[in-house]
Length: 274
Length: 190
Image (cartoon, rainbow over all chains, first blue to last red; front, side, top):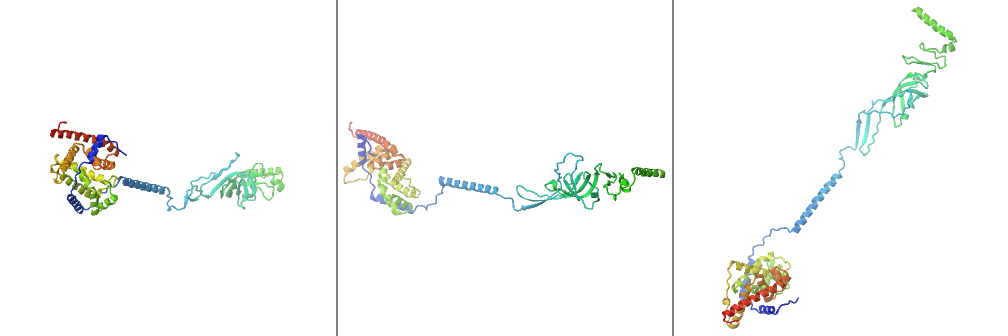
């Protein structure tokens, strides 16, 4: 770029350009060079400069260190989140549950009289075998004593049905010869309880009459619970405590009055004895 | 003064202690540095001493030198400026006449005229601020480029272009004043 100068400036510049220049004599120049080169030989050994790290390098190092620390922390945290239950925990645990559960049968009983009472005695020991899983489903087997008291609805051999519950009675139980539909029994026994209560089968241990159906020719000794039923068979004589109810007239040919007379004579005889 | 073609390589070799490289750099810049100093100080002897000191400092400073893009010569001129400032700081400013110039019997009149002109210019320059002196010497006496002058003075080239007008004006005023004084001393009425 050409420069613009005024005439006086141009004149002054020309004067400066032509100004006498001081010349360095050759011998002086050589002498100075010799001093310079000699100084080069006697320069102190270059000591390593205390290296001040450049700011950029320092920043990069700091950033890298921060990134490493952050990464390490994140890695540790991620590892902690993925920690599984210690393998020292057995995969299958057997737990003995104390028999604290009271099993209440969910029978829906119609309000009839008498009301059956089903009592589940928690005399059971349960063994729960559970595996660690989100939804443990323990399998419980419980032995119980079941008490059923109610009218007999059906009789099939040695199996009677009370309120839909089948009760298996010992085949040689003498009560089988006297029980009939409508009789009210008190049954105690053991059985299996499944998920369906209608399938309960009770193997009885105790069966007693609570009441007998009236107007069915059945007589019961209130003190002992013994029952005599006139089943029309003359070989089955009524006990002493039971009224004959026409059995003697039919099977022994005695008149009603005689029956009465016999009975009256029996009473007189007892009074005479007194 | 143009930079050497292989100046970067020479500098690297000089930093490694290569005497040949150091000698080459010295030969390339010694006259320019001496001329610059010669117009800044009052005597040639001082100029020679300061010139030697500049290159000794160059050798000492080469290991620390880093190429920042500025001409190598600008670095040397800055060392020279520092040496001149130190010289004036430690010595009272003594305005000497050019009587100590070595005599040259071959052309006594011509030599005297040159010596007088040089003394006149040096006196006028000495009255200017140091930056003006450096600019006028480097830019117009030695013909250095704006870039080198700007790097030496640590200013932009645009600032140098503006500054050179002010420096010329200031020098003209000094030369005019000194011319009037000299005319008066010679008994010439203006």
